Length: 326
Image 1 (cartoon, one colour):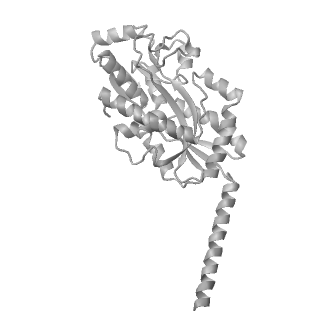
Image 2: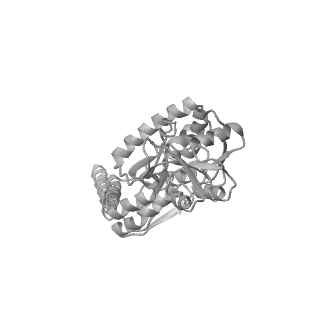
Image 3: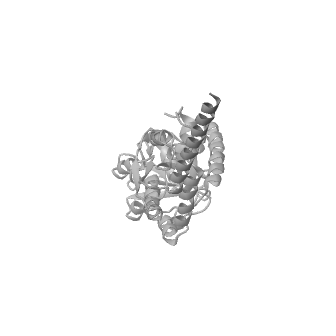
């Protein structure tokens, strides 16, 4: 009996070693099939643009297809849940917008946690926001917009990519600072919001520059202010928030890649190493600048620290401004 138990133990140990070796071999050959980038917004917004900017060069670097899968809705929750439930093997990744990642969980009860359920891979893009109005609205500055809103209470509305998005929180912050009331109209992503803004169905929005630049250049949208402490080089004639009289309207977005928690470190290391190389290329940096964004790489440790700081910051802002999900 003793000899039998020893034999069984030896077989189990050997099986464990074999499984471990197989796992290491799989990690070592990563990737050996296509990778899915699940995007938390509809096509046309900066989250989608960030995913598509990285997908093609990352596919070349890894030798496998990197496919973009847009899953808008639920303020980022539909995409987040899809990745949260995915096998943590590096083949299903999340490209997430900061407003959804650090603000949605503060305003609504979610089944996912930004820190507990996701392993940071890399930050891809960062960008201030720009307040734009439809070209037919009779205002040419933030001061004039505030005066118009006060003279026409509850007549103006603004589009956002959803309840709890940074666009939502930013504009509610402006409402609170300026003592005005501009009505919120949420959409399932920046793309649909832009369609209605261009169609004249809403009056304004605050969002990142990439989806705005072409429409600003064409005169279809009028920029009033950049929500940062300095002007944006690609919109050098548009005043910064301090210049417009609102120094505390300092709001930037970031767009980052995450893996399901439990994804092997060698897999994350491979991904973030290749992403860093891509983001340091002149082509990637130039494309980001043309879109009014910054190719701001953060490694997993830096991104983790940054997102925790952002969670603390927005907790204070939301509480001070008494912002609630609608």
